[in-house]
Amino acid sequence: MFALQTVRIMKSYRNECVAWIRGWFEKNGPRCCAVLGMSGGKDSTVAAALCAEALGPERVVGIAMPADGQGLNCADEICKYLGIRYLCLPIGKIESSFGELGALMPGKEFSLQTRQNIPPRIRMTMLYAAAQTLGGMVANTCNLSEDHIGYATLYGDAAGSFSPLGKLVVQEVLAIGDDMGLPREWVHKTPDDGLPGSMPDEAKFGFSYAVLDRYIREGVCDDPAVKEKIDSMHRRNLFKTEILHIPTFIPSL
Image (cartoon, rainbow, N blue to C red):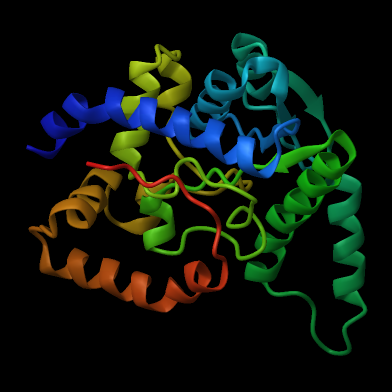
């Protein structure tokens, strides 16, 4: 039922989101460009495509920010396909300097979670530096599924000036990407956080995005243990969305 529903209303969501982006920029930055961090995943790809449709590709800038040992993950190809401006700003040297700072802490180095959260926060700083220089607004590319369970770094990828996908679950983002005719290998790429040696998102969670999306939209979860896990993750991470009040597209249906 949920899958059929998303197919039926995705064109409406797409058109509404495009109109919302256009209206937000008319009010907040009529001459500004949209600036997005391009990870090569579904969210940044779909968000960039929506911004390009709303503003014109000449007013969209996609920025890849690989850490040491990371590739571009097709970010350059995606920007070329969309016809938007592409920049590559590697963060390896900045990230390594944080490691040196961690070693200076008396008796205690940065924890694993701290080290994992440093790259997203560096990238958000880079995005705002680029946006301020280029006369742009930074897009938050998180979706509702990730936000619901706190799968984003506070003041890292959870930040931004406007959010086109923040009230859309993963299945809806995928359906919009398909409706826009974006290459399937980019839209349906197995999602992961991009950390070296990391597992795909769903293996890490212990449940699929489809299960999570159905629970968010319909309140139905067939596995009580999974339901409790989702509820627990939501409770523990709710403060993130409460702290960051980002203007977000809200679909009407």
